[in-house]
Image 1 (cartoon, rainbow, N blue to C red):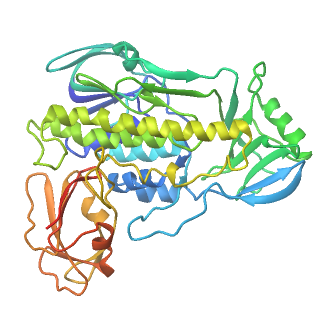
Image 2 (image 1 turned 180 degrees about the horizontal axis):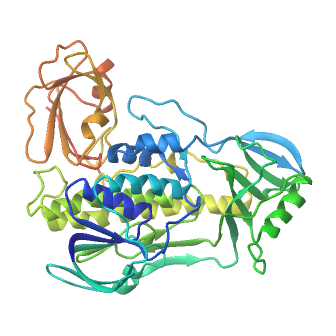
Image 3 (image 1 turned 45 degrees about the horizontal axis):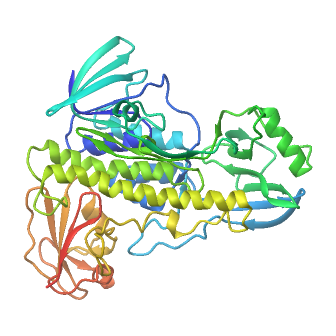
Length: 488
């Protein structure tokens, strides 16, 4: 059995990539060695840039309906209420940034939404199916799968390892996973019920003489579960009794009973980055390419955006021809595929630095260790070239903006971008047409009377946010970053 792309690993990264490929008409096969779908909160924080990815992939409504904003955290020291804090201060949407705040949803729930979307394209995750080995040549990859029906040999044009920190694909390629693991620091994470607590809030319980050395319970949307996080001594087993002991000691309460965890894991600081993200026709994405501390909520989000960067590039390569000139960055397919590693490895290295700095603040007991700023929201990620200057240049994120059609109805730039195509915007010009793989639009200034196929920039936001004048032309890549701009 053959497919154009074989993906090993059906977590958020693999699912995102499969959706992006399937909507482009690419034959994709998604396998996972697990016998059943993951059930736990793990990566429960969805960053604003990831919400924009989900908007494009057609799952934003389901994600928003299932999740909730981050809950305020009530701080208790020696069992006494002290204050209420938020990790991030809520921000109002703007014309350029429609989703300015993180969103909370347990990882297993996010994966369920993505699986449902993937099923709309007729693709389903194959559980209990492990990638046992593979070889590659100039024209493709031959892989051996071990599934319920026994061993199977499959052929694919490309293989993507989205199979986690212990990646079989990365190990088979012999790619170094550079970094460190701190065995001296352990943390217990789990999903538990604590019905005596108001589920509308998160809780931080600690001793007054060690306010930063406590336990956290954060409410998870869609039920009564909290995500529990607590330090774990080296010789301690991760049991319900350990959790209850923390609660009893740090709260002073006798009515706060912790139920048996429905999911739990022991986490150690494991900060690693793959030396390469590509080897011929094989790619690494998500935790297979980089693993992060949970501080900052970056790991799942970075993996999803790996997939979003890679999907359209693989599709262009499989189209048998170079993408439209400039639409995909490098016009040469080989250079285009190389750009995945160039762009995403630099981002992963930067994000690992942010996560590590936050972890160091936490272990040092810094008062602002729980604060999260704009650097964690991933809206500022850019692929601009070294030395590039300007308000908005090639490689930068393409902002949103409100528009109006000739019939008076409203829409957004993100509505124009949504889908597998690149988008050409011509500001204050009517000479914009569609070409292969590119949809073109004329954006007129406020007060103009739009004709057929022309759109008016409401209140001039599109002109302002794109630093555009009359005659400016901007090409937006399929993943929502500028491929190029030309000013008159």
